[in-house]
Length: 110
Image (cartoon, rainbow, N blue to C red; front, side, top):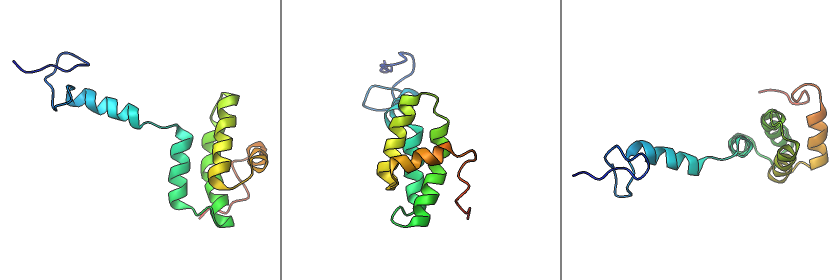
């Protein structure tokens, strides 16, 4: 008799870990999930060099819209601190950028 999945208990397991392929994919996806701001920072760091002024501006321009969508002020604060640490832009400057009416008007788009 084939072994059943530890999670859904209905499908045969696809590996020696005791989970079917669907449940294993879901569990791995949850384990790899990161906060949207962390993902945005990582993606922006791959495209923009924070060691240069234009790179910092483009990095901030890419991530600030994601931070703006966070409704919870405490979570938004933590994300701004993370962006400050990863980008090299001071937190008070990031707060000024967040207060600007448009996304980030001082960055020339490529």
